[in-house]
Image 1 (cartoon, rainbow, N blue to C red):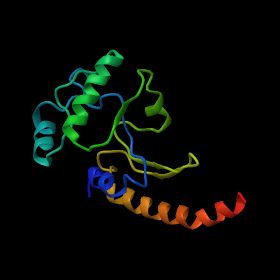
Image 2: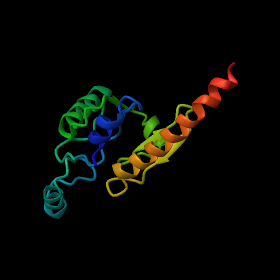
Image 3: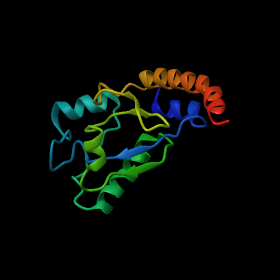
Length: 146
């Protein structure tokens, strides 16, 4: 199960958003571009970028986000975190993380840190449980507002 598969299955019930944060492996930082890390990425068929420098401006970050969006092919609209990394810091998102946020703004599911904690199958379970809980509450909510 991929994030794209989840989007295809649940996009009419759940709003999906991807937020591009600081580049995890820039060429001018913690780089995966050569040696064993690069070989591991190729063998794992990872879509992690190995040729981007750490964006210095918001426009550079937007460009990197567009490249990421094209490479990952999730089909989900991508937004870009500001240069102060406000979203990344608030959600401890570095290097990658998936969340399910309820309509009330509460975190319903917080995946582990990626790449090993990036588990769409766990998110699917959380979505199913959340939708069942919300669906059961709808008659209560309608009754409360009468």
